[in-house]
Length: 163
Image 1: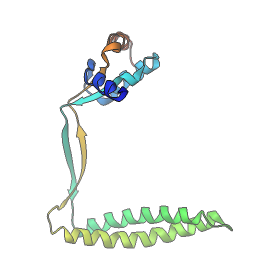
Image 2 (image 1 turned 135 degrees about the vertical axis):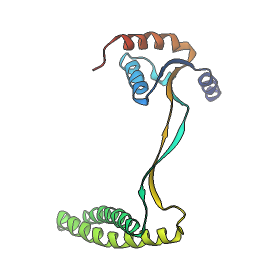
Image 3 (image 1 turned 120 degrees about the vertical axis):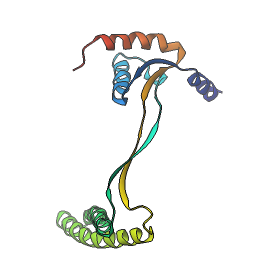
């Protein structure tokens, strides 16, 4: 019963402020929190979402090999270091030795897997990229029973200079 009441209340939230960036919306909620406002009644809602894929470069066998080797080396070094810490006699020396071996073995295995995965792609995706979600604006919303107080507190934020 209480869960149903919570979900009904949250569907009726009011927009109390709108910001062009997430950082500004986050700053507004942080300001509310600093004023001892019950922030569990607040949400940041993104509007106008876009999926953006930024192409970072061309992918070929050499780059696939390098990317795989770097990824494998980092993973191998980390796992080797962790296993080395379990040594009873010289944990730091063992950790560094195993990290070095893990780095070398991981680089070789990563390079092999990088080449195999690129070869199996059949040239369908000959580029590398980074993906992100972006929004046009961010709404700070509050439950109806506290919305007026939140608007008043955020009005104080707008009138104070930012550092």
